[in-house]
Image (cartoon, rainbow, N blue to C red; front, side):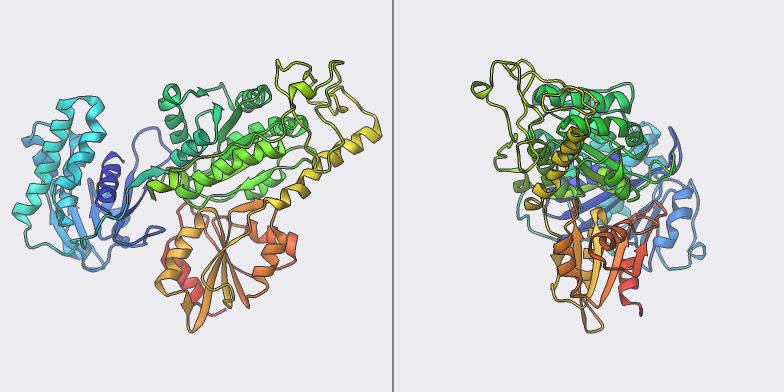
Length: 565
């Protein structure tokens, strides 16, 4: 993974667009681990289903991935591991034996240094100058000292020199030159969420480790001191959400992050946030379920779960970023909405987004973020008779001004019981009815902030692919290849980043124009299509559903779109 990161960052600094993702089994140690890096001279949105260079550090890598090769793919392997022959493949790859272990021994290194040598070999095969990776290697290992930097540079150089000396005629994968247009950041979706949270004024995060949101923990913990935030690792997810609710009531922007199993433990706390009207941001990184499922693989199985989670009825917002750039902007939006409406706001990410590395222009992260803390009680306007109505019924939008602990004359009661306007427990029927209506008024108020679905391609196209979250990238990649047209018919993408409250009117207006609608989701039941039918009456009969833990590839999308209904 370290070598994959170095490769991605090196080419991004040179002006290439990069995308990298990893796969690893649900094991503490061992198992088959890979990193796939795509490098292009144009903007890209997803991986492809084929591999141009397969860097095999053991026999298993070739066994598991040779079906992804095409005629002309390069397979780099160490003949000490296995002496592959052309007859071992159904296609016609170019077999390139490289003595990875021998080069490690020459440099008196540890076996793990084969990764660094493989990095140098890859750069050599791509036909670029070694200087491209020198600065990145230095940045990656500088905290470990000059000697570690020197040795890694030496091993990477040995792999690069082996290619230049022994394989000078092998130019099948030389990448076209490009010109750098702007500075970019290479970061994971979780890092983008962390960056967005900090820019949005988040000051407290209580997160129990759980794949795939652990890199968010790393980001927050590593930078807590310099960013002046508190990251707390609680004993479990139940404690985590209650800590975050407490921090929110105390007046700071707070968040939790988890996956489906961890969120199941948080649901009672979620309902508490709904009752006390505490702003809260929840990053839910989806993975394969049910139960432990396949915890290191990706899926979109929790959409309906987060919409309906909790006992009783209370409003919430659900947002679903499609990539790292949107993870950043929607995280900021999540904190703004949470404060404005005093509700829980979900960021629905997934393993594919959380752990993949995306290439995002640096300018995307620049500019001021004007924080909107919503309705805050002003001390000078508060009465001195301890009658502050934290849950005042006199607001058309259902949102009452809130005070913070220590604010003069702003004290009120906040507990899990139904309450009256000042927070005292009340089971009086008319008060109960009024409080439910007060909270649900927020759903109507939210309508002015709902983000409509995004349309890519001709809005009047006859064929529409419906997506949400991370499925947007592969679908866009597929349709861009064919110019958003198949067989003379125009095709577009209607993508939902704002999921709930559902943008029913906008969705109906867009989808009613299409004669053929294809729902593309990474779950087994078409959860977004069910939501669309619930709120618009539109029944989507064609679905492309994938739930094997692997992300979509553009080739799969094209096969479906080009098929006859």
